Structures are given as C-alpha cells and as structure tokens.
Image (cartoon, rainbow, N blue to C red; front, top):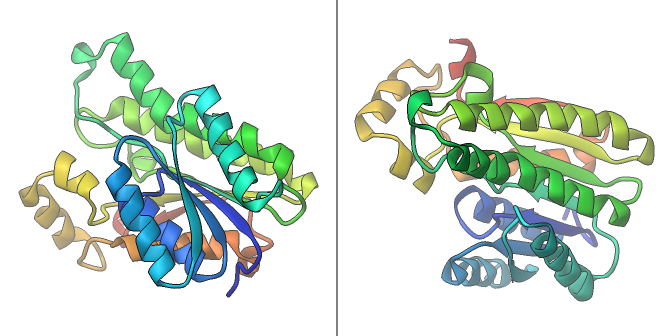
Amino acid sequence: MKLKGKVAIVTGGARDLGRAVSIKLASEGAKVVVNYFDNPEDAKETLKMIQENGGEAIIAQGDMTKAEEVKNLFAAGIAAFGDRIDILVNVVGGIFGRKEITEQDEAWYNLLMDVNMKSCWLCTREVVPHMTNGGAIVNFSSLAARDGGGQGASIYASAKGAVMTFTRSMAKELGPKGIRVNAVAPGTIATSFHDRFNTPENREKMKAIYPLRREGDAGDIADLVLFLVSDDSDYITGTNIDINGGIFFS
C-alpha cells in the first residue's frame, strides 16, 4: 500500500491507459478521482473494478480543455476526499486522425494542441494550490515527441513535445515546493488508440523490429506511473521516461 492515505486525480482515467493507472493507484491505497469525458459506462466499469478490488474512488465527468470544467473536476475531488491532492496524472490526449500539412486547418491544430497540451496546463495550474511537499505530477507524452510521429501526425507529435518541455519547466518551478513533475513517453501500447489509428499490418511490422519483439500493455504503463508517484522515486523529477520496448534507439 505505497499510496495509503493519498488522493489522486487521473484525467482520462476511465479507459485504456487511464483505467489501468486508476486501478493501479487505487490498489496501492490512493483515493482516486477518475475523470471521463463522454462515456459514463466506461467510467462506471472502472469504478466497479476499483471497488471490487477494495479500492476507493469517485467518477467525475469533465472536458479538460475547458477551464471551468477543470475547476469542477477538482471541486468534486475536494468535496469527496478533502482539500489536499497528492497526485495528478494527466492522461488526457489523442491523435483523432492523420492529416498531411496541406490538409490541416486551424480547427485541427487547436483541437490537437488543446487536448494534448492545454489540458495538461489547465490541470497542473489547478492542482498546485492543493499540493504540498511530497506531491507528484505525471504527464503523458509519447514516442511521437521523440521521433516526430508517423505520417500525418505532425501536430500531435508537436503537442506531445510541448508536454515534454512543460514537464521540465514545471519540475524547476515546483521543485522548491517539494512537488515532483515527470512524464512518460509510451511507444506502441495495445489499447483502443492503436486499434483506431494504426493498422494490424504496421503493428506486426513494428513488433518485428522492437528489441523486445512485442507491444506494451496498459499494465506496463501503470507500473511506471506508480513508481513515479510513489516515494520509490522521490529524487526523480523533470524526466521524460521512454517506455517503448527499445524501439526509439533501435
């Protein structure tokens, strides 16, 4: 029970990677606020899984690209578990599709930057007044931020690169308060994200060149997040940790 007595907010915490993170943190004793956007059934299922495992959580709807809805999410967490928030995991993000530069318009740019970067900024801004010494923030970047992303993913990759830079900036700014800020940068993880925006053929091709010869799974990511928010990593801040089976350097 590495997180006993701590309160965690997980944005995008109802499915895929967010669900795995929410369940993992709750299993280690954290009281978890599970945010979701547009699918209450996913959120209810995640809550059920947490409770069946003996954990404590609430679910809270909200669009993390909207300042007022971010405030409402944090207010729900404070009402349920008290004013102190120990952990924030910014999972919210998405690619939404692939477009070449000549196909992109301002609405497309704004969508990808808002979902991937603005959400991270808004939630970090909101949590800091409620975090004390020992607080931990984990942001979600991507392998795309390292290598520029696949075809048609330029804005997504750029937004995730901004998350990496923001992580380092916040580590410097919040370190004197005793708050650590890190990011994870997943490669291909077997979730609905790649079911929608990748092809089976490309996934098999990529697995053949991974040093570990497999895709990751959501549990791999959740284990890393747990490490980064627990006291096991209390001298680690400002890092962007690659978790991709070795593909980045291969």
